[in-house]
Length: 71
Image 1 (cartoon, one colour):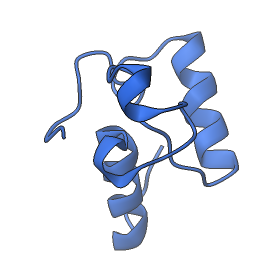
Image 2: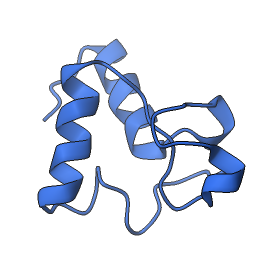
Image 3: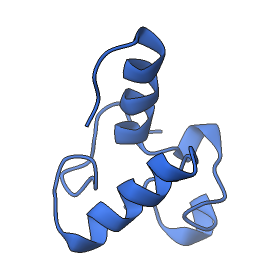
């Protein structure tokens, strides 16, 4: 659905709420959907579908697989 991170991606824009999303995602190794896609199309934030998965999280997973240092 998306090809690049949205302008409000929690992996790009840092604030307390976004840091909580990232922290939970990293701690539990759990993907999440892009929060900019309407809930009726994506479901809940943590009910991940590959086509609505957060691009920032996908990039994090790719770096993790490549063995690069992340956050």
